[in-house]
Length: 385
Image (cartoon, rainbow, N blue to C red; front, side, top):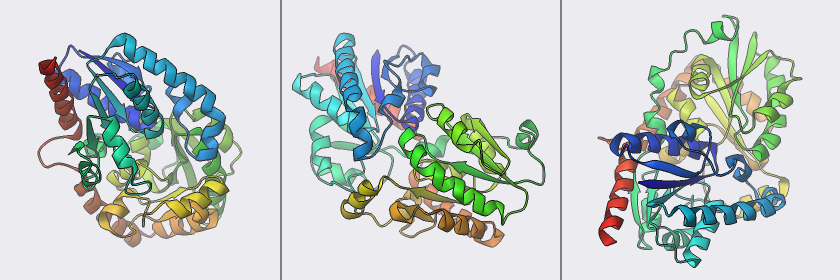
């Protein structure tokens, strides 16, 4: 059984690896191929090329990378045709994935195609839902309200739940985190997460560093912990080497969660990490910005009230957002300072818990449900053949 994965994001790497684990439990003979990240390698996966080459967002950020991306598209199509897998599972990264699937369609490739993580058509370009329906055979969504956007175009959709609900965060022991990294017991730790893409790290770090400088004057014994991923680790290390506050850069899933549990607050790039922080009961703010022109376009074309998933699910701002033109260091610092108030922090933690409960099915974990769908599609295709 040959299963071909394609993802270009660190979050997709984690999602695909959880699915691989569930597939190995149900079908030990499964072999994994394609494009992915470090976590997927735990299951015998070797990526065709470095996933970080695809990890870019923003119109003007993509343009310089186009020749390389086109080269990788051609390489991936050739690899799929050579391997003839039983199924192709694309995970997030819709920009690259849609181009790949379009090329496969032109070649009349008959391998079943399953996409995991719905493009955010509810936010912008709602017409993309029709294109998704033309390119994939089935869609697995992380959010309960997403299937309706695609089902009206005849695409079979399944809400499987969000992977954050099965991270077993409660099992992470954070008791020795300070000792391990020689962090004083009286230190007030703030976790700072500037993103997992080189383009977003480049934009957000200056804003976050300035916010840290402001907070260092207002919070005693401030200590900064910066969880990061290997794709951007070098850039992050260089960017933070001259800050005045004591700090520590860490990598690894368990280390990240331990840091969250020991933090009085966090500043994070808007994205999945907000759900992880919420699961760790860490008060936090989220921020995001592009270059000025992309910000201008986003203001015009992106139609959402909130950027944060918990805020969307609860229809109100629970997690403070500083997006596009509002991504300002002083505003971020002021809000983080508010969150150090125990009453304000406790209320946020209570309300984020309500949002997290909407992200799961009652009787099955997301990866297990996703694995069942994968094996069902392979079995149905075998019957057709």
